[in-house]
Length: 367
Image 1 (cartoon, rainbow, N blue to C red):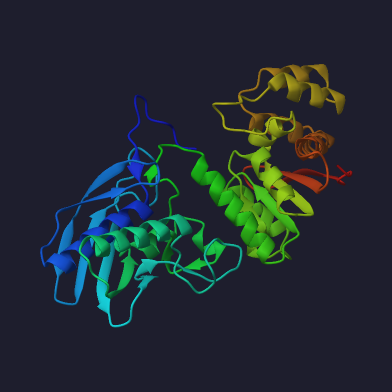
Image 2 (image 1 turned 180 degrees about the horizontal axis):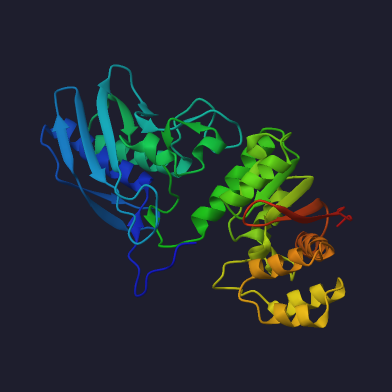
């Protein structure tokens, strides 16, 4: 995880809020014939926000407005992206909302947007439509309207997200349930985990593989080549949360794949494994080493080690492979305890270089 800047953190705005603001600006320009320089909207967090409009062009039938997304101090992939809304009159009544260049399209079930539609999530969709309806009502206009949201750099930005895995093709999603981006909020990451599990289940996956990051996921994909891409879920530091969501959504088997650093914490029952919130307990690792046959000198070396990875190297060099099997088994037991049984759990440990260290399996037990 990225280091958190010191001092008070600045909030930003979601892509959904930006799309709403540009839609209001474009529609106001279309009605009045006057380009807009700013746009004020009401956010789901029950407060107003004013957005600077980067550009606004208007003709008799169409208007386009854009703003630059400001994510505040959050390390957001869409920070600095140009969010564009183009509005045009329709002959038939009603409002049509669609995505243009750089807004992804949904191709898999399990997402809050139906297959085939632009990846504009429910809350932003409602914000955009309600804001447009409000502007039309304000000016006493009953004509039909088409709104197209675009993100020129969206396809490139999407490569830094999980959209491809989730079946969102061709660009980013227009997101945000609150309208604001809370810096370093865990909510967005947790939401992506829930979404990933939903897509896996909708794709028929009863066995999912949860990993702490990209390197672990590569190892997992080699270990389980028979599983579809949807079955692999990056949980980051949120081990307990992910396990509970897997059980809640009806997953039958969960495979945990990772490395010594974070999984040595899971083995102790620590289910939020960020380095700041849970340091490695070398006394615990020393006890496991001792119970699997390590001599006193090696056990003492482990107690004074610098990293869990270093402990793994020590045990591997000495041929104490049962150490990794026991550590993996502790992970399985801790996971089952976390979810109160009901799913099968297996754990596999790898080195930083992708070498297998050990594995263990525990059947569910019924909750």
